[in-house]
Amino acid sequence: MSKRKATIIFDLETSGFRCMPMLSDYHRVLQICARCIETGQVFDSFVNPEFKGGVPTYSSHIHDIKQSDIMKAPPMEVVLQNMYNFFNFQSYDTVELIAHNCTYFDKIMIMKEYKTVDGEFVPDNIVFWDTLTWLRKNKPGLKSYRLGDLYKYFYGNDITNAHRADADVMALARIYLEHIAPYRSEKMTQKDIEMAKIESECLTSIRFIGEWRACLLYKHATIGTVSQLKEFAKSFILKGEPRGFDTWLKDVIGIRDVTSRMFVLSEVYNIPIWQDELFSLVDLRHCDENCISEVDYYIKYRYVLNEPAPNKHLYNIGLMKMYKKIDY
Image 1: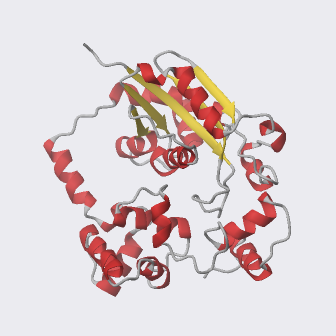
Image 2: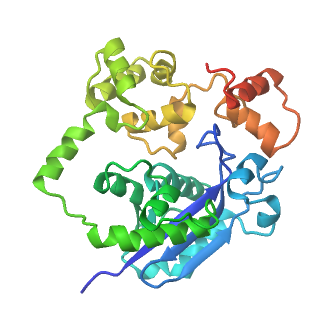
């Protein structure tokens, strides 16, 4: 008996924008659109995260989703349940959710949102798959792997109404059906398995650890592999300095962006990046209340709450970092 599988292309639009920490409480989903390849069904819904100050204007400039669009929309827990029922997830052995840059964005945002729903967990039959990873491996040498650029590469024209979830889903579905699905294979040869083992030990396999930072890791601590980096990070825990490794990454290796460091911490400590446990390992000395960086603090009071910030110094640092006036 063959197992039933649903292949669902999806895309999210969020309240995030340049410099906003990805794991901020104020980086939330505003729209979700999904299309089932097997049935042709399309689910599309705005989401109301119920921000006090409405949708940040900075993010509205990207996707043109305004507060008036989401005012009457349901909250995320209702939207997730509506999508679950709409596609009848429970009737499938596997529901594969596919997005472009799924690994480092859409999956993380979905897992973050599920975390906020009381008593809810991602259904066991859901798996995620990333078209960006596949295309980079199987279509090497392209100038850009942004969805809009890929669409123009394959079809010669731009996506109509790009940066809206519904338009991006239709574009990705076409690319997937015509240029990915016919050639996609889950089977790994012995050579693939061996190469995967080798690559997993390379420092550059960790997101935000490029060649230059890999060189710095070796220069400052003689670290040349992922295993060695994990042992080095563990030493801070054993010394009773749980946030020490994060501080070291910031001060010695120069990873200033908190989201970038959290990706490294997630990999090194083997903690999913959306889990709150990770925050116990992040140096938050310069933050305030529920914010995870000075930029987050600035965004909270300028774009979300739309009210004067109690700590003007912290607010001004966030403002300067936001516009790249300072970097420390």
